[in-house]
Image (cartoon, rainbow, N blue to C red):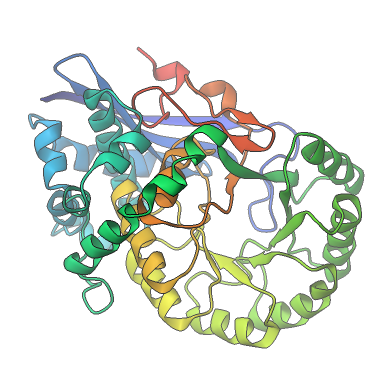
Length: 410
């Protein structure tokens, strides 16, 4: 039984120009952390990610949601978590502040993720193991599929999981080999060119075969120069992604993406405003075969559904600390599988939680094991930080979702 809750506002200052992009020039990586204390002494930890200001508002909202779980047994909650998620996300007053987006939805992510962490710890297994061992029916019971009925029903979700389970054994080798990562820290926006060059070399030496550069400069020539610099250092066999962090309007995106084609980017990420589906569709059609990736700022399953219906996204970057937590992440993952689009999460959690979710995606859903973003800047703060070896995430073995923070460990 959950006997106590605690919600903490935790913020970290980054060194140098780490974390900078074209829009967020001076971020303070922050977590709204929910902890659920079980009467057996186990603590479930979950969080949502922000860039500092407003983190306290997310904490206040998370406390509101978490209070509704006090006195309940986590196993009973998770047996029908889809209904719990629906009830919380449709709270008659908080829903007005969204619905299903913004501060209140980030807060729900924090609470949801704490529930999954506590569930895995009570079960005594890593979250990835808990998720892949659930039956399709049990798993779908943890999901809220409302507003998706025309594209993904409960029966379709269950059938999809049963179909994937028939070939699951062929994908379980990923547990031993580790999940491939890509280095997203080689080219933060405010890094000078020489630092970008050295970071590229270092990433290759560490075994990464994919990396990402921040673009979106006021002077397009700077983006083009830096993109060609990365391609020159990395060579043609390394995947290089370019991330504009929503900086361009559509005319700007149409112009610069055509200029960037020459260095053969693997994708262009978040080229314009995340709510503008039509602009993304227009851009995708204009620059094909260059591909778009998006999802870091997409807040819920409905907007993802619309993006998938439009056919403009080649990669979906759903983030479990941005949408409503693990439950909605899995829902969106199943949606993507339905549409044949790969999931490559954004990792506001620094990869801690998502290393579990991509294993689930690959083994239980049948998604391609493409790669997972790696951002190392907060590793020192986690009790069990992600372990990267030869460019691959090593499979976590400790019970839970790997989200416990050292400063909140007791």
